[in-house]
Image 1 (tube, rainbow, N blue to C red):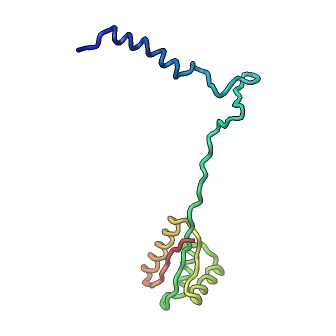
Image 2 (cartoon, rainbow, N blue to C red):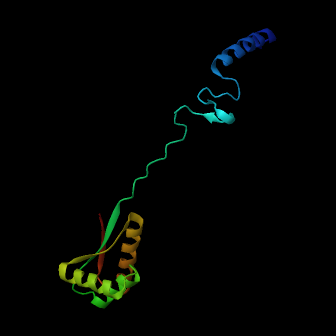
Length: 138
């Protein structure tokens, strides 16, 4: 049975009364009122959105591990080329790897540390050296 005119019109008669109770007149904000010079004042209410607090990403150490077969000059070249160290810093870390068994090459975010480890491992394999490089959470 199709809806007829009187049913629809009676619904629309009730609709504005219901909506008027829920909606406020256009252009009026119940929180803000006109202050001096026509500007809206907030009466101490926070109207600015809170800025999200950003958490710093975890950092990872990129670590070279000692072995008895990789030449020291190759390790220095790796440290200079991949980690952008000068010769003296590269020599210091290479000697630390040689004497203490491991040395920290740098501290990076996860993705960068992972890339550095992959670059070192790739170059070591390309030159047939068993040099190991890992990353450890800081």
